[in-house]
Length: 253
Image (cartoon, rainbow, N blue to C red; front, side):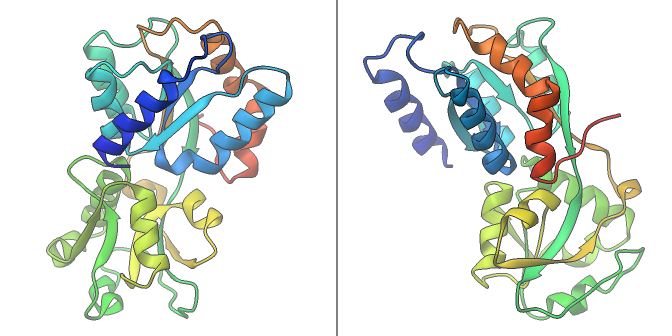
């Protein structure tokens, strides 16, 4: 979600004449969490709580919005770096940061593709791309893009494709490029591929090729919502984690 649209969303969400007790906490969550976070919000609402208001975008964009004063209650990042960034600026409530879920990095192609690749050092990525481009989150900011560059660098293929990247504003936008056939291959999370009908996984990056993919969560320091901490605890509970496990997420060790 571009910055302007995100700001409009936040304004409309909070401009409604509802007190904090009537609306749920405002959650800014990494784009790859869409299905699982909506499942969790529905489960929370089924317990007779106000349903959380959730905005999805790249972790980088969300962190910048919090830095700029967005009235968020809870932040869930797709990497530790953007959470570190906010913590370093004193924008997280002490004692609320926790490791949440984990993911895997995969290479996807359109569903009709018959391609299969073993993602080992020197694998033929350029040949597989043909004349097309590699869709991925912007490596300069988006966590999935950063993980992708790290993995391809360690496997010795990044130098061959770095000028042929279709940079997307978040991992779901990269996924959409492949689903629409605008890119023959894309790098996304395993859970994104699981949620999409228009792509298939053609290879899984070795866990050793990149840093562990972890999603930390924390309350934003300025949050005053009475249910923000309770919802955070629900997400970290056995019941909450089971919701994310059903969507393909794993958990940090």
